[in-house]
Image 1: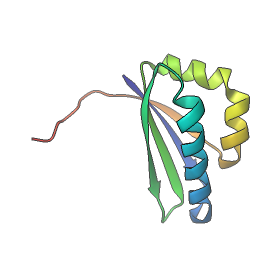
Image 2 (image 1 turned 90 degrees about the horizontal axis):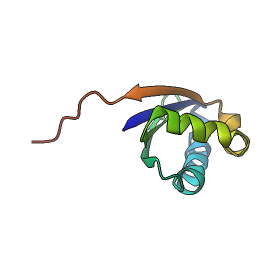
Image 3 (image 1 turned 30 degrees about the vertical axis):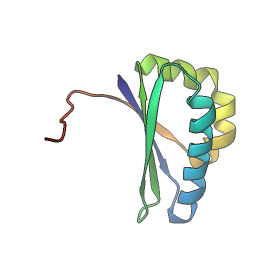
Image 4 (image 1 turned 90 degrees about the vertical axis):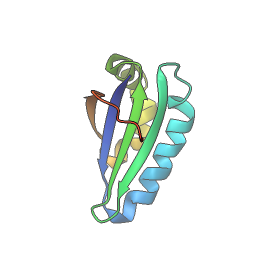
Length: 96
């Protein structure tokens, strides 16, 4: 699996709106993709930063999904100025 990380620098007063938009689109459009395996949304309230970590089979799966749904995604998240990064999982350390 690979991680697609999308960061939103929205400011402290727009964090809640961004999180709700992410929860809505991730719970519907994104979750319906067979290559998608889940997401976690993180917030740094002091800076107004929201980060969405999504697990996909491959980065290409995420990119194909993003590109083929750009209009729908833009309608929901475009105002928040997303910046994406592709991250490889290189180690998992289980709790002992």
